Image 1 (tube, rainbow, N blue to C red):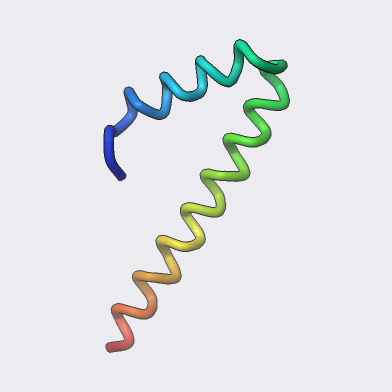
Image 2: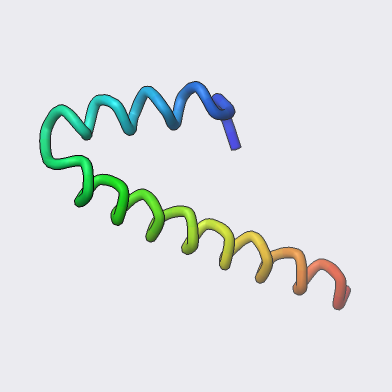
Length: 49
């Protein structure tokens, strides 16, 4: 992950100004879950090799 925590927080702040906070949080959580899923899949594949 590039930029670490600060970058993601900046992005979140900017998008919060555009639309409501609740919608933003929901979208954020969905992205995090997807990222976590792909990460674990990659790890599992590496373990198999």
